[in-house]
Amino acid sequence: MSVKETPSKVTANALSSLDISKASKTDLTASLVAAANAKAAAAGLAPAVAVEKVSKEAEEHKAFLSQHRVHRHKLKELEKDEPLLVENKRRFVLFPIKYHEIWQMYKKAEASFWTAEEIDLSKDLHDWNERLNDNERYFISRVLAFFAASDGIVNENLVENFSAEVQVPEAKCFYGFQIMMENIHSETYSLLIDTYVKDPKENEYLFNAIDNIPCIKEKAEWALRWINDKDALFGERLVAFAAVEGIFFSGSFASIFWLKKRGLMPGLTFSNELICRDEGLHTDFACLLFSHLNNTPDESIVRKIIIEAVDIEKRYFTDALAVNLLGMNKDLMCQYVEFVADRLFVALGCDKHYNVTNPFDFMENISLAGKTNFFEKRVSDYQKAGVMAKKDDAAADSGFSFDDDF
Image (cartoon, rainbow, N blue to C red; front, side):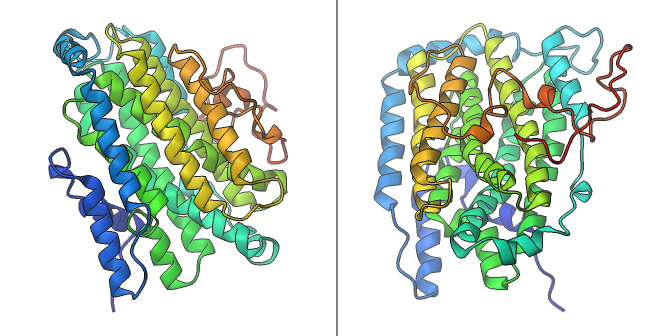
């Protein structure tokens, strides 16, 4: 009897194939494209597209940063005295709490713990098979394929970099909890794909999206470039992964809330609410740590990082939304990505860049990096009792409602 690889193992193998240990010295794009083209050739398919475009952008990225190398080198030297990063002999002991805002972020994350087993998918398969059309299934399957791989990349960064670099125990607590929640997100998305996509070849194709789907591959290559750039400032990498979780995820979250507005896929949409809340908190945490840095990157670099992420995300939706759907198309989604990016600019202390409005009324109250945190606006039934409760809290009926309009 053959043993099927778990989705997390498939993702891990895909990441390993990128030769991460040598990524700072080799062209990640070349290895990604070579793997994809070899696989395509074996299957008798055409080579992967958009090869030169990705390589060109990687070179432009390096060239832009090299223009700032003198100033960046000075900031790199100053990092050894950065309070968040300097060796802390008391890092093994939590109390007394020194960074209260960071600690409260951790307590919010702790209070909102949930597991994949709490998601009821019993009604979703009927909607998937009977109420979604082929174009809608194509779109949502690409969204889930990206999500299934993305949490592994986020965790790669947390384990290899952030949780090891940051010496503040309050922040280490948050990162430890985030790693666990990203695992739960990854498990959830893998279960969703296994539930909806019964064809073994299509299932395997989606689980190997990093190799098989060029626009998802481009996202992975961009994020991995920041993970493995040993010359990058900590502040630059904070911004980059705020962009991963705040921009790369935002449009995909919106696409699933679009299904909720139509009364479809209750299991998928509820898991999306929980994961959107978690990722909003993770993005807020990155912005909070950024605000604690004594020496932040040049604003032009911050803008370049976010604009790069926006451009990549637009290309992703141009592919995923090749056909206009009812109330959803690539132009609206690209505008929404720009809207969310402006929120992230403001959260990082910069002026807006795009100055566009939110095209989706159903996303008004839950935009990532918005003024009202999703956690505070909708207290889920899965919030652990007593963790965030106040002594005078008698609001027993303030739980999560399945039929709220978001």
